[in-house]
Amino acid sequence: MTMLKPISRHQFDRSVESTLADFYWSWFDAHIADTDELRDTAFRLRYRVYCIENPFEDPSANPDGREIDDLDKHSVHGLLVYRPNGSPAGTVRLVLPLPHDPYNSFALQRVCNDPLLRDPIRFPVRKMAEVSRFCISKEFRRRWGDNSYMAGDVADSAEMSVDEERRILPHLSLGLIESLVRMSIDNGITHWCAVMEPTLLRLLTRLGIHFDSIGPLIEYHGRRQPCYIPLSVMLPRVQRERPDVWDVITRGGKHWIDLGRLTAEKSEHQMALCAARTA
Image 1 (cartoon, rainbow, N blue to C red):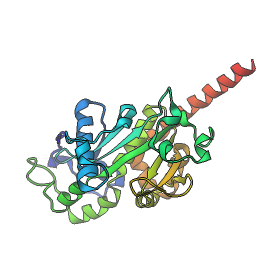
Image 2: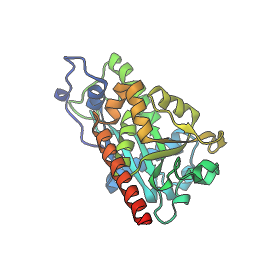
Image 3: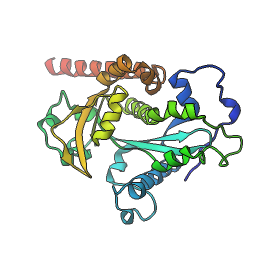
Image 4: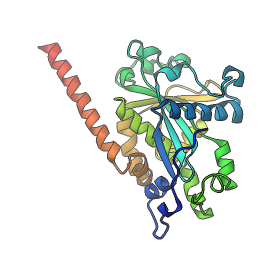
């Protein structure tokens, strides 16, 4: 497993009470896995989560210790890193629409045929991407809890107090969400869809992120809920309900500004197309 660059003890300043964003980013960083090495780290972490820790995928189908499927060919990946020693803690992918076949791009489209998926307003498939492989390793949680991730791996690594652990544990996934927002903007994505476990949806709700259901629960590696959400709806609601979370997942508002530019460009493009059709 790749060890990313750690940070040293003197970079941690506990002399003043920090915001959640300051506190979170002092312990974690979110990387876009845009190199072969980082993608390999993400795939190996997925193997540990989905083939070893959970009975989700068959280990024999991934004999090289990397969990990969056909959707990875048109996906971008995020990697959550524990900064004191550079250990990967979690990963997520954003499956992008296929330019030549957008209506057969996502796992959601294979397992759900709800009419909403054919609604170009509510489900704008060419601006839609699917959130999947969203995970924090149980092994990381266990080893973190007994401090073996924080001691001995890297010299001069910082250690987290019990109070700090309690503060960060409910927010471990925020770096993955931030990477999803960043990757969406980078790829012109304005809407997310997913087939999620109800427990994950409840966790996201506590963070102010409320996906809308697409039909009833379905059977897909267990009971799962097809769902979707526009970023232009999600982020303002998070800001209202959980401004501390909003600060983390938008990097202090930067991604919100970038999303506004993306939305404005999309509107201008649509207006130009309409004008051309009526000319």
